[in-house]
Amino acid sequence: MPVLSPKSAKLQQSPIRKLAPLARNAEARGTEVIYLNIGQPDMPTPPEMIAELHGLALNRLAYAPSEGLPESREAWSAFFAGWGIDFSPDEILVTAGASEAITFALSVVAGGGDEVLVFEPCYTNYLSFAAQADVKMVPITLKVEDGYHFGDIDRLRKCITPRSRAILLCNPSNPTGTVYTESELEAVAEIAVEHDLFVICDEVYREFVFDSGQVRSFTRFADLAQRIIVVDSVSKRFNACGVRIGCLATKNREILDVTLRFCQARLSVATAEQLMVVPMLENGRSYSERLCGEYQRRRDAVFSGLSLIYGLEPHRSEGSFYTMTRLPIDSCEDFAAWLLRDFTHEKSTICLAPGEGFYVTPGLGTDEVRIAFMYDVATLKRAMRILEAAIKAFPER
Image 1 (spheres, rainbow, N blue to C red):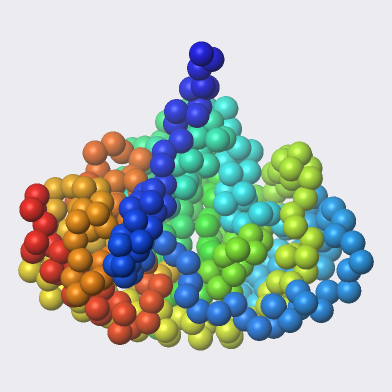
Image 2 (cartoon, rainbow, N blue to C red; image 1 turned 135 degrees about the vertical axis):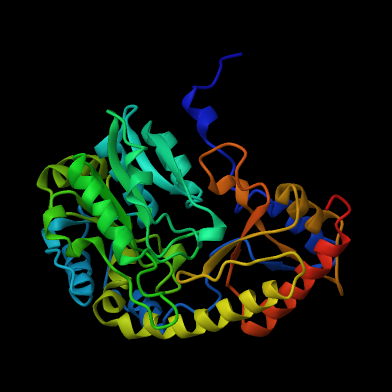
């Protein structure tokens, strides 16, 4: 039999999705499953976007330009301008979600075996993107006791090697909900200049900062202008994950030119979807900012529920719509499977994302889970009661 490539062996199963078969089996048995594992917003997509899609005056769906439709690039430029971020349309490439943008960015700056620093726990798909790009991810391990903040610049310095090419961070963070402090961002900027690195900024949760906090974009560091690569997406801010429209933005012309070759190789991004998001990109900031208040109420419900569980010291998420927390369980992987296979509480159970898959370092995160705030407050409170009952009942605790 022919053997598969070594690269294919580096792709891990998604900790977010791999329990789906067990969840479907549980539902087939008549058990209600509350899905806390996936960041799929439960609220409707804005009617303006749906109306725009239905009203498109197209008699054929032709290829879009590889760099994106002019209307789409202009809309992204207007969106960034609303945040005081200066990217002209020709400094923006439209991508199939932020996922494609990150894969392209990793390939361009470090593809072929070089290294990118990343804070762990990190968005699990970063690991698969890196494997596709043949990039080695070098982890900076953050701890729940520190609120998943790194604090000390020396922690970054110790991870630099001759093969370091970039730092990748998500701010606000998926999966931890951390919003990095001013001093932390300054530390990343200092290290980038000191060691001649790029900074890949995943800012898809920019609007979702709790407790009247503010997100701090790297684009305001003028001395990083040629080092910054911003990736963004409409998925979460407009409840439109299935649209798969994102972008890569940078002032570095060499990065733009090389990334465009990747864009040309995949031909184009969907035409109708690019057009349907234009109105929200141009005028939708107030919509997504209103969502922040709802997600904060949900954060509060989850945090309060976790705080009532004996043995837990939960992390209070500062942004996005996720939290990571440590459970008094040795293997959250086994626990998550058991929840779906063997446990019910008042005819319901929950689906969790085990924490181990969010770490680059093998063996870390085995006692952690990620929780997404994708239900109303009442349902999330009930989910926390189910979690409490499950922890007490778990035979391998």
